[in-house]
Image (cartoon, rainbow, N blue to C red; front, side, top):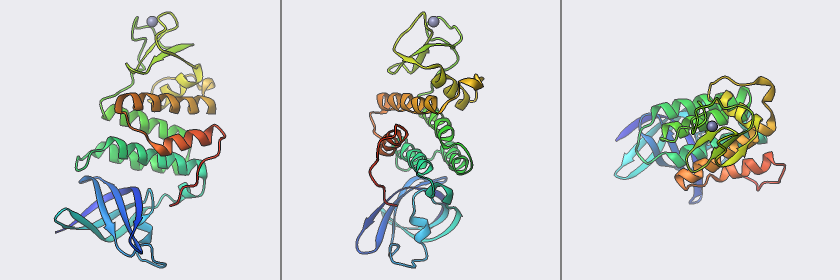
Length: 247
Ligand SMILES: [Zn+2]
């Protein structure tokens, strides 16, 4: 049976002499694994479609449990993400988050459309903010929405020094103070990326780095899942060296 899906590549693995196994996040079928034959040969026609973050229409042939890609038309290769290491890691983190929250065969149209938009934003603008916004949305769609509307104990507006309870996923004011301290910049970044009101002057690169760290700590507490690319991206933002990623 032949089917066509709009999909982005979450992950690829080489196998055999010149083949690849790719994991797709598709609009129509959710997560799908498919083989691409001969795609590692020089000059292979579908080489582009076996690259991370490629967004294309894939033609899949299903034979029982096995899926093989027989055709693909490129919609967006997001090439700008391959030319900048920070953008590359932000995008790798995004697909890693998708991979971690998606179960095989479960369709999630909203997450798919958000992922495509976020990859586009990463190409053109601030990849950290695009990733944080996407991460907040992915958490919300997975049932782990972060409540930034006020102190979880007394309802006071969250401003100045606040605290974050990783296990509960909520914030408290300086008086109620439950959990770990959160910088003003981190809070401003989270508010901005969640689409709320924020203090523009408080936004900083350090706040973005810390916001990502906070979200990942919360994500891990809820899902017990690691996203390797996100850990490598955090190291990169900390100025530490990272291991090399092949594409
Ligand atoms: Zn309070």
